[in-house]
Image 1 (spheres, rainbow, N blue to C red):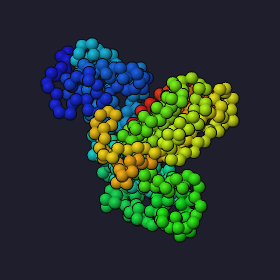
Image 2: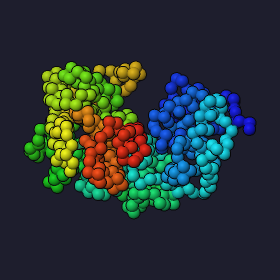
Image 3: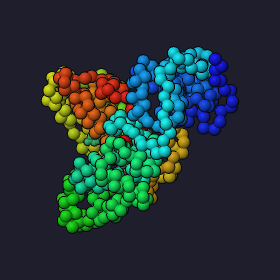
Image 4: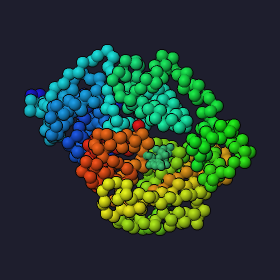
Length: 506
Ligand code: CTP
Ligand code: MN
Ligand code: MN
């Protein structure tokens, strides 16, 4: 009956590393106990509340399931269900306690981990420590948590390069195959050391496996190497680096014997307005946008939105919402809490910005989305209101290389000499306006990553017989649209565990 109560001063690394620790988090009192609360059936908000409570009481409660976890806490789950979930998360671990939430709440009440009684046990599970443990993952990227950092960057960089090359060569099928393979490796809990660990993993085709094998054996892949160095790949990269130029146009130029920007300028080709702007601001646009620059643009656009439509709301989407530190552009989604108020916002916003000299190029497209046309159902309200603007902004930059960001810390602007000299730079910006009834779908759709989005749609179609877009979710079986007002609700409707933006980096 003696509870496992340890009052030792915590060892290094036990201060709830990796969790969003608040000032309320106590140092770990029980360093040998690492808890993980299963969100399934418990729900995200109750899980967050219970996790916080635990941390305040000095327990280590981990946000993510890892091999350090010693106790899994579940609510309203059967042993069978949890075992199946564990199967999909397989990690190297000796003994794992699968406990009902009652053990947790009693431990919270007493302030220490109470003795585990039979009634607390869901199931005692022993997983053998095998020599080489094959990895196991669910097949869709939207069922997995993929952070920005991964344990296999050598492999994922290689596969991503092959994906990029395939996409630039208009071989979309091959591109997706390489992206999926890379995404699987990004989600692995540790580095791959042996090809045998990959047996049974989804989405690893023959070609990808060959590349992986090469890298594991020789430290590099000759195919990746020669692709990277090929004149064609280099030229495709240069040309598609021009805003407004896609792989088809780039390919045509290459076939005409044009291989660099100077040759393109000399060729006398007529470029459209987007391409002209793209060529003019080529260096700036191909310079990554920093978080500080995204913040600055957020301020400007936020101010503009507030003055043309008070009450309108703006959120940063795209890679920055997923926690990326740099991006190729800055993506914003704008809405108004009152349905219909957002109509006509985009032209007003653009002319506000334009009249202040903040826009170097822009093209606004009205969205042609019509639920009654696009889907078989005939729901009301949201008709043809989704607008988007692809723009090149003129961003003022301070001449100093270091400036204070909003949060006060010093951060480095990724600026070139030329930019420092002229005190402004061109930045690609995407603006999207959505009616509030579609906001959750637009937010989910514009947060990315591109593969994560693709996988969500594939999951919806293949596994749920639903169609997901940035506007709506349609249930093909029931023949109706499913409303949702948050991303959490959409995941729930799709029968998926909620994945936060920072873990959608597939
Ligand atoms: N998107 C879209 N329709 C487009 C272009 C983009 O729905 N015509 C979505 C993509 O699916 C992605 C998001 O917008 O989810 C952001 O796209 P993009 O800015 O291209 O990519 P990021 O992930 O933001 O990467 P980066 O940081 O390089 O900008
Ligand atoms: Mn982006
Ligand atoms: Mn974008």
